[in-house]
Image 1: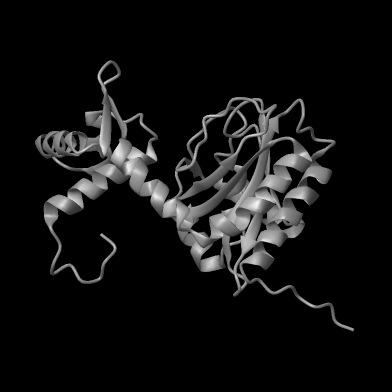
Image 2: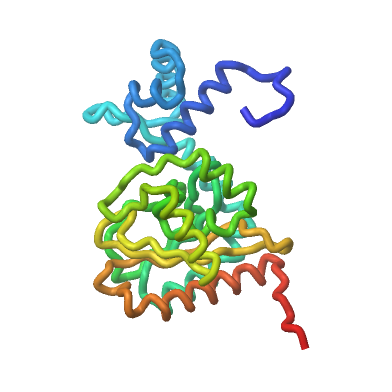
Length: 263
């Protein structure tokens, strides 16, 4: 629980929120045993809370796979929250322009604890099928948006994120060595954008750039994603410039002030 004052905390509600967060983090792939493992709660408690959340439509249960995913009520609440985000509204016209210019799928993501949370996604007409959706959580160490968000955090924040990071492999190309990721972070900060080169999904390449608020703090990232047959190594430079231009336009719209070159 994030509140510094827990005098009014209700333990069962706190546990229910932990379970909702655990299910959301695994995108509907969590079993009862998985919930127990991820939350550390007793199995009997997990059973009771899952039953309640399912009855109230905050969770749905896949009877065949015996897994849980967010239910309709959770999606309605989440969609309302997403719709209220000024960033999402400000960014949408620029995301549409980026899709039109590149012909590839565009994602807008923010930092959410130890992941990159997708708050908007626009599919291109020729897009390959991807598992991502609004509300999807990308790992920081191997996604374009995740690495862009990670690389441009202030040093203390970045070190905290790195210290908690689990370098889970998703493909043979996933970076699982902290030292290699540290090297890549330096490269990302130098060139201004991040690349996911088949690290989270084979055959998929992404380019992402950071979005800054009025204080210069990186609060989000925008990316384009497409098959490696279209998003080629030779074409990365041009695509990166388009993504960076989009990120800069969004940043300006939410109040970022561009540095004026010295005379």
